[in-house]
Image (cartoon, rainbow, N blue to C red; front, side):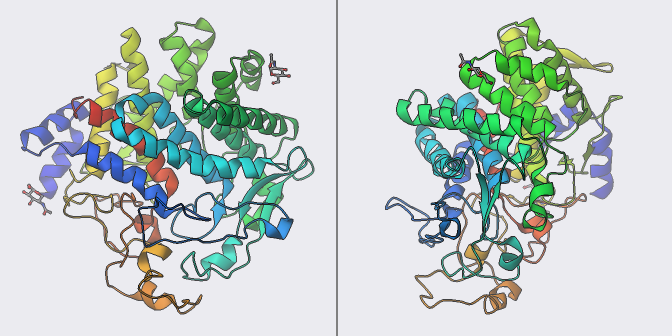
Length: 490
Ligand SMILES: *[C@@H]1O[C@H](CO)[C@@H](O)[C@H](O)[C@H]1NC(C)=O
Ligand SMILES: *[C@@H]1O[C@H](CO)[C@@H](O)[C@H](O)[C@H]1NC(C)=O
């Protein structure tokens, strides 16, 4: 088995895809996975839950968020397996969910409504964060260090709900640029279905972007241990300024954003796309104008996007991406699937733009077509859904074998219905330490995923591999809609 897989690795990717099909494995049920990937967001909700909440083991939580600063910051999403609301990854999640609906909403069928609701849940919260401008942009609620010392249900949470913000004297162009991107992207999603909401979102996006541009700085320099090492801005803020301006340009068609984009002269080469680093995403988004509309002003972004894709594909001089023996893209050992889903989203989306103009490009001697990009993305999505050496689906509740001990407080502790009395900060660790499966299914959650040898231990303690996060799921929503509609053909 090992040598067989080892041999695989050296085949070109297209060939290994053929081998997978040749082995007779059925295509995943992308439609089922799509519905579940959206349902997951219900389990991450903070605030007052609506009557149509279907993940029933959750209930109201953090109803007084914001009161420490005399503002309303109720709602939004817990980012992962903890009970903190981190504005930076929440905004990225919102942007990627919105981009998913913009590109693939028509392919979502009955899931487009739930997808929009998942966006609205976050966008409502981001509007609250932006309500303190021009003096404050709120960027999170909940002391992350106190939170991480407890294993508590969100419904019982009694750690300090400290409110964090950036300001003209303690700036954060990264978090502001991403928040502006999220609000602008959500405005585009709602433009045709809820006009007045869309106008509110766009007006907030413009204010937040102005703040991001005017007061340059890294939010981790301003907020220190409140955001680091959790969501430190490692890549700086230039990528979010590019990303925010790209989304505002798309939402407003105001050419001053194009002038601004060109003035940033961001030539940083990247081989990743994540909640921290958005260069590649911005370049793909801007490439649409070059490919679909044939606008030459966007060609430099198109070339940068193509340089990025060459770093992702194997067997060419620019390649800097490793693959596991089973064929999974492997970028970093902690929560690797976040990179796989976000890069797969860029692959399917760029493939879509390329197909509309029959465009091709080259990586060394390799000729890249839209189907080259699509088949790599399909291979990654299929791996996540169980076409891998362990036959393990990395989506909770999808397929016959999936993670049962995810690193998630609410999922691993008994529900309020089965255990109405509070479970204290330390008391909860008996459930954390147990080897039993989690009592509550966080259906649709994608976990951090396997190691570089395709292994997975399904261990609650191993958060690098067993923790879900909103930004792992959000880009996959778009990919799943794409493959659900095209019935898996790539
Ligand atoms: C375009 O955006 C700039 C700021 O980025 C703003 O000053 C200007 O008023 C906007 N123009 C229009 C027509 O909205
Ligand atoms: C995975 O499934 C395939 C085909 O269904 C089977 O041949 C193989 O033994 C399985 N692998 C494991 C690790 O269970």
